Image (cartoon, rainbow, N blue to C red):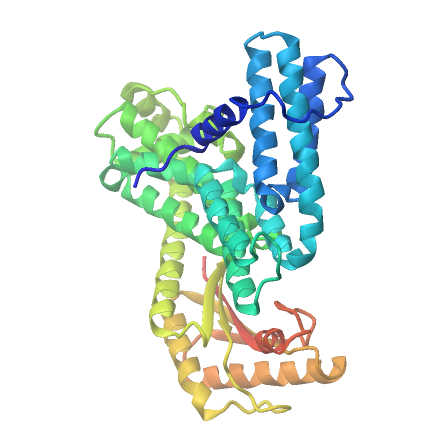
Length: 455
């Protein structure tokens, strides 16, 4: 089924509304008879209405206000009589006032779900047509389940809609931070990078997926994903520059193109700043003779290339480890993700008995599976971190988490993995969920294995 573009839908709605607008209520404009100031006034009202989420709480009135505001903008741009512009602006303001009158009382039946929606909106989902369409679908279901906000959501409906808004928030952050990297990778594939620059493409794809995964873990904490996003954008920039070299001189081997890019950066002809990614996308093609000359002016690029390949090899191993973990470890038992230059195994079910640090026999197979995955990495060290919930005193939790971390480290040592083991207990100082609920406390009772590899 073909979907009608949102912009066309607005135009259709506006046309339908304007066909019978002669008797519509017009609000008084504070801007007086200045059409431009009137549009600015109503635009600010619309922004405030969106902030109050009246676009879903009073969707019909808000949509009508938006349609008349768009009509006023078009009339001003077309140079129509100021009376026509002011009339449309005044009608738009009246509709936004109606939206406020109707929508604000409805908030009481949807306060908590609107908080989830507000978080999604804060992730700039409106900058993507696809995400706007997803938002509209969720909003429609919200309005349906609450019967236009005349009743509160059931717990099951609340849970389902909250999950969907949270997933949309993740997508919004991913699109905002990694959208350009995704476009670069797609363009490179269209340019046959799978054959022309497979290693560079693979690195960019792995870094991109890592960044996406890190954002999904904690979309509201940039400190946890900013490094991964930076690495993804850096790899995308490298891919873009390498493909520009190859397209400029068809037949150039990938490793030669990489050296050329590195030399150009050393000479200041290319920027390694990921903020320049859009500009780098339009880098002019260089002649093969120019590139060969650049190669002769430096030998240091080879060392940099080796370092990048080593980093790529580590990234590949990390991705392979994460893929294997997802295949062999149940999601309820363990979560595996990359955090900067380390790989974290979050063990959710070691199932220590209350107040003890003795590993149950039923939990040892899980540790053995994790050990088998870790052995395939070029491990420098593994730090076992113990965590508890907030039940009990700070001293007891600290002691218990340390003893449990030590027990896990001791057991891994008996498996003979031949990697350096350390441990630390953090008590309840690093929660990842609320300690106000049983589920949250269960999530906080965990053991993390932080794996560092040799460089």
